[in-house]
Amino acid sequence: MSELSTETELFVATARAFLDKTAALSDQRDLHARGESYDEAWWRQAAELGWAGLLVPEQLGGGSVSGCGLRDLAAIATEIGRTVAPGPLYPISMVLAGLVDADNRQAHAHSIAALLCGELVATWAADEPGRGFHPHQPALAATATDGGYRLNGVKDRVEAGDRADLVLIGARTDDGALRQFLIRTDAPGVRVTPQPGIDLVKRFARIEFCDAAVDASAVVGTAAQAGALIERQTQVGIALVCAEVAGILDAVMTMTVDWARDRYSFGRPLASYQAIKHRLADMTMWLHACRAIADGAVDKVAARDADAAMWVGAAKSYLGEHAGRLIQECVQLHGGIGVTWEHDLHLYLRRATLYRGLLGTPAEHHQAIFAAASSTEPAA
Image: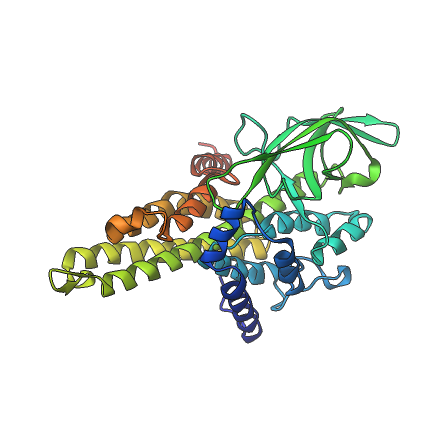
């Protein structure tokens, strides 16, 4: 990611102070003990700091610090990774990424404004039961009616779906067109069932649509641009997840290096042993590689580069394969204490493990990259 401006550094420092004060690791444990994913008042405070509006143009009430909202948002995501903070920032950001690019965004101006101030929470439902991550190929059906559509189908693994007021979904119409709809989760015919997750505070839901009627105002964008909107939402979501994982790895490496320096074995610090030094050196190389590819993906998505899809796929697969391995190495270097509930390492491992499968697995992204590369190869 490009070097941060002075204004962005101040913005990030404010976010770091806010997270340290209100979303420390002990706060995640408290939320888990209460069976909650995040505090609504806390999210409204985060929205007031401008987090929700970074991808939204000024004329719609948003605005960025540096002039590039995604880079600012990715910097916040990295800070979130350092405390594995809760909240619906990514689902809301993916929804807003689609809404602000839609040709009919003014029709959703009220929803955008409510999301910016934290009054409402929205999520993007892209996954469906028994299927991999294929947001461009939904099985959910949208049947045309007089003045609207009737929706039938199921979405699952919907992040923050149990707390969301609005859900953005993709569906196929009678004529086979791909369309997106923004609807309320309390609408007739919509049923939300919470789903457990491996993370202490990230929650998910299964959302069923049984003859759920929506009018034409629920449509987001045109049929011609639906695919591009979904691709943008996907790229934004993956870029943010990768930025957070980079922050997670920074935190666990700092924790582990400090432990190796402070922990003595046979009268010497662990970090003084050559074998430990070599392991830490290898882990540092992985860390820098993960950070570099995450930053590259953010820059490509921010610039709307033609290669952005390839970059986010490469970043997601690389981080998915290496982040868990790096954190497991950190656990091993901590010894027995590293596998206890009381130690904080498992909080980071849980989040990284969750993200490995969210928005596509490494295998799915490898396949997509291979397919894209094969299609551009010149014929023999």
